[in-house]
Every structure is written in structure tokens, then in C-alpha cells.
Image (cartoon, rainbow, N blue to C red; front, top):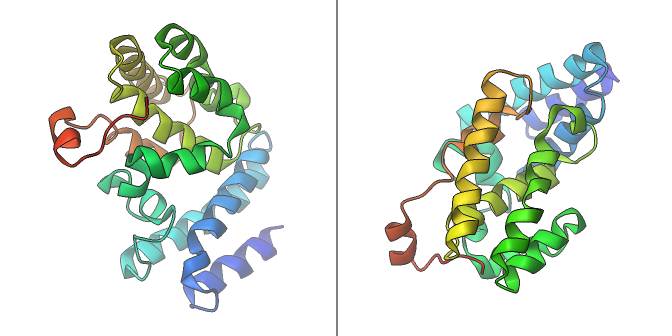
Amino acid sequence: MGAWIQTLTRAISSRRLYFERCPAVFFRLYTLYLRHSRNPKLAQIILDPLEATLNVVRRQQRVEHNLPWAQEIFSPSRGLSRAFRLPSEFKKVLLTERTLNQLRMHLENENPEGAVLQSKIIADIFSIENTAKYSSETRLVSLVLLHHLITSKMLQVSQRGTQLARSLQLGCDDSTTFNLLTHESSLLCTIVPDKGKAVAEGILSID
């Protein structure tokens, strides 16, 4: 396993892997790490070369941020890419995430009570006990959806989104409740935007 991971990460670093495939490769490797998170030794064998290679790609800035998912993993401190902030674009991705279907439908039907109730799934996805259960792609989509909860025009939903975001941050700080990957933690710090700016840019909520 370790040799295979190192070979793949070396291929990325040396440009033998087309960079338009980079985001998908990194997300798959992070999913592999999450799946083996209950085996600390194996998980570290995956994570160490993965993050070292990711840092190389970030430093060299050879990946276009307009590629799908790229900004979120290569430059997470810049926040979510416009495609994910735009409701019409994000819905296309959200529709593929069955885990989030109930929450999505309540938002689309403008049912704040139902949305607040179903929002618990986001906390479940990032809980330490469920680390191995969900893919890194599902986790990212959940963070994007959290952004849309926070910017929702439904007050109850917006308040719940903010509460969830703060809970994730606090729970990760003490490492007892939630577990976030490095790029997820950086994204979480950026997903409470200035609502006036979002409206000015035409980036509205998904509800």
C-alpha cells in the first residue's frame, strides 16, 4: 500500500499525471485515508506522502483554479469557488449526493423546520465515529451545503447553519467530537460570507 501511494504521489509531483485530473486524484486518496482511519499506522502511510505532494502542487501553483473542485483543495483559504457558491451550479452536484437528499428537498420546498431537522446529517458526516463512512467528496459537498444554509433567506435555516459551523470548529479544536481534514478546516473558516457582498455578486441562496 505504502509503495503504491508513493508511486502515485511522485507521478503527480513530476507531471506524469495530467493536472486536470489532480483534484479527483487527491479526493480519492483522501477517501482512502478516511476509510482506513481506524488503522492509524496505515492511515499515516497514506496521509504523509499525500499531504507532502499536495503542498508541492500548491507551492508550484500549476493547477488552474477554475477546474472543478480545484480551488477547494489547492487554495482552500480563498474560500469556495464561484461554481459552488452559485445555487444553479451547486444543485447539479448536490443532486448526486443521496446522503443529503432529505436536506436538499426541504430547502427546495422552503420548509425551514424540515431543513433544520435534517441538517443534523452534516454533523453526522464529520463526527469522529463516522470518519470512515463518507467519502471526501461527500464531505466537501456537505461543507458547501453548510455555506448555503448560512446564506439562506430562511432565518431559522441561516441560524442553524451558523450554529453548525461553530460546532464543527469547536469540536475539531478539542479533537473529541468532529474530525476535519486540513483543507476542510480552512474552508470552514471562509464559509460565513458577508451576505451583502453575496447579494451584490448575484450569489443567492439555494432556497
